Length: 461
Image 1: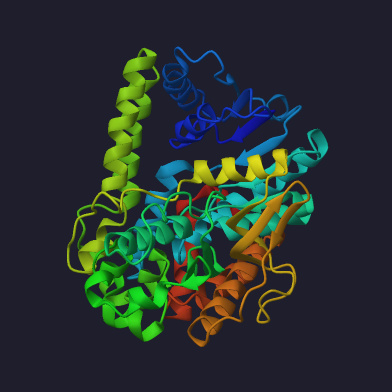
Image 2: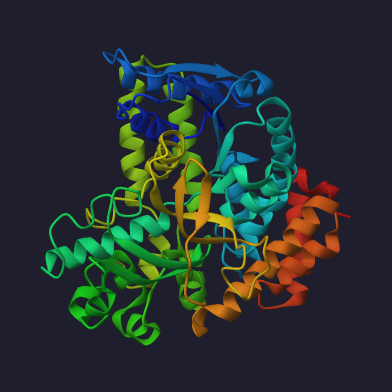
């Protein structure tokens, strides 16, 4: 099989390649085509992959290109992982938001809307080229904001597009690992959860970066209530420390980590404003150093530098939120994410081998949640097999989630309207309606600031 990665110079691409190297199945990926508009980034990542492939006779062939149609021709699967404007644009988004006393975050609030407004016009063009060059391909979307981008791509490519995020899987794993440590579930229960290789059913519902874990069924029994009854255990994993035992017990669920920005908005904003640098600025400096050096290094040295850079990146993830929650460090279990790479490989394996898997994905609602229309993309457990991706039946949204999910979906729809029609009014509606914006006047001022900051937003009128 052939896999094409759009945004092939991205820092996480080696994680995908590592997952491919571990796949020994008969119908595995034999060629990876990396497409990017930045040749230096492509060279750097190609060097890392060359080191990973050393001594592996069955390693997938790597082809790098800056020609989109060449990258897409013959693809069986396409990963979309683009970032219009790069980490520099992310850093600017965060700084703009903070100038207006709003939370500056990549995919939530001002940052997420700006990210989408820059990226969606390009996403539409990519979807049209995929339809023209490789209409048979399945598209797995990594590009953020993942739910919103997936919904836009589906307008062109239909049901052959699915969005992924590793946050729900990472959350479920951390909870199960905590329960294993307390001998409340069997050892090994966390292994493979959310990746198709587990008998554990994860009851998770919401939108991308706006979801709740409300059940974990091991051998048919929901073990989440046992966790929620134990404040000592709730302090044993990252989300428990972020949200505190009392709030989790009040909800009766464990929120996705990104809900910290909503539930602790004042504290998160204060921590970000006090930070020496925003997350985007930090990553911009870190990655600029990596790409500048790695592109000129021998493969082994480039790979070593990438590993060191990645370890630091994971250790500093959501640092300001942890500061706002009491200043704690990530432990070893927290550092193990769900893995975009593993989720994506599980999708490909399930489709190519007709080996059914249960995964948490971004898919069309199709009547699952009564508060949203049929085409709204939601993040829910799905069954994946050769016939496609099928959302599993789910209980209605709980009361604490209904209003927030409906409001943020409205924001996404306004953002889509702005990006697809060039309507500045729609962009203002999106910014003003977001729960992390506290003033219509501020929303209009923020958009003006964003347009002055990003040339890509000149189309909004």
